[in-house]
Amino acid sequence: MTAEPAPGKREDRLGALVGDLLDDLATKSLSPAASSVAAMSIAFAAALTAKAARRSAAEMESAAATAAQADSLRRRALALASLNAEAYELAISTLASSAEGEKPPTPADGGEDRDLEIRDALARTSDALSRLLEVACDVCLLANLVAKQGKPGAQADAAVAATQAEAGARAAMELIEINLLSDELEDAKREARDALATASEAAGHALAAAL
Image (cartoon, rainbow, N blue to C red; front, side, top):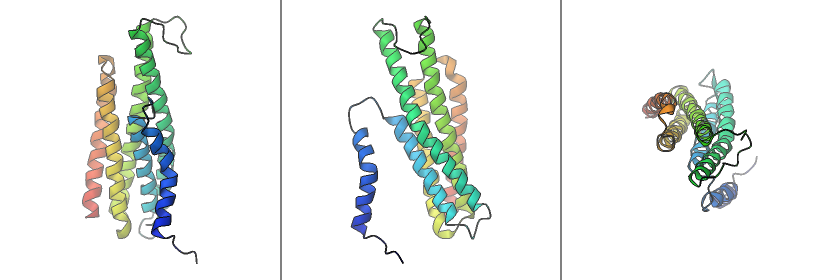
């Protein structure tokens, strides 16, 4: 039987796993930044949901499928961490170039005017954040399921996962509201608010179920 690592050893391992990421976040570089942190929060929540589901195999008939879904959402959230960072950098670069009266250095230049390029950059940012919010909503729904049906000892993990994913969804919504000021993006904002409402409701139910 493999012995459990001593508390200090476990702490060192966790520090080694996340230390480089935290060091990168703490620099003054443009990215990774808020959107990547939100995506990572959602990825952690998905992983915790998968763990809670796997621990509940005896209580949940759908435990294996739920864990697999959570694994898929975790991978999507991680991919969106990079995609959101890239979209944010492009938007900032485009807006800065426009403010300086220079042509933005984008690959898909093609002679389009600056207004079109700015709209395209903002639309990419909106799309990346909206996709992230959708993933967060799905994680909340899965975590709520595990909190209601899972093993008593795993229900708390599922509830925490739901609140973590809801926090990530709220962060994505705030970034949409703050960064995307164009009236042309109102439909995207409305859909994002609906997704956040669903995530918040699921997180609330998960917390209630775990009490």
